[in-house]
Image 1 (cartoon, rainbow, N blue to C red):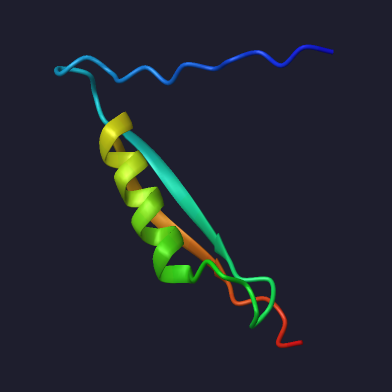
Image 2: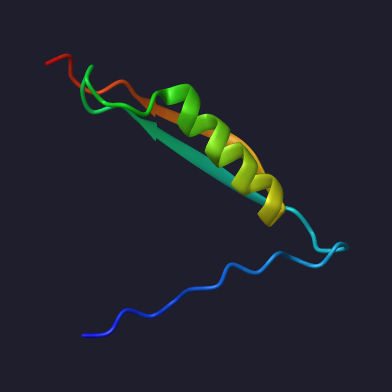
Amino acid sequence: MMEQAHTVRRPAENAQRVRAAQYLRMSTDHQSYSIDNQKDAIRAFADAMNYDTVATYEDAGRCA
């Protein structure tokens, strides 16, 4: 099976902003990507895609 490339297209400058929620999850204490890193990545993507983050769901995961 061949993988298909996906292109992310930026919205037009005058496009209406879209409301969105973000879900942040830390599965273990040993995970290398912190909640703050996830927030930063989502914020950058949301800005590029013209999204307004209106809700945050955070799951600290388990402490294993």
